[in-house]
Length: 54
Image 1: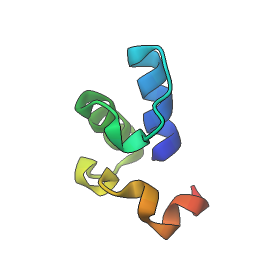
Image 2: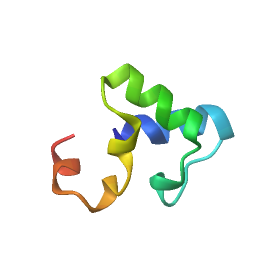
Image 3: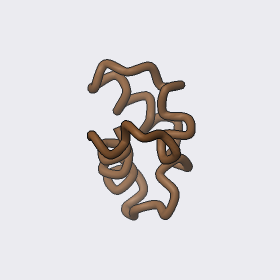
């Protein structure tokens, strides 16, 4: 999910963010829809252990 949000942010804003949790809501919503996640599941993604499995 984090990689997808970063890719969407680059496509939308033209740059990577230092903190992917600051991705615009439309990017997170789109990524979540594509991956079958709830957008709220992205909150605090960087602090969760499962991010290493993605």
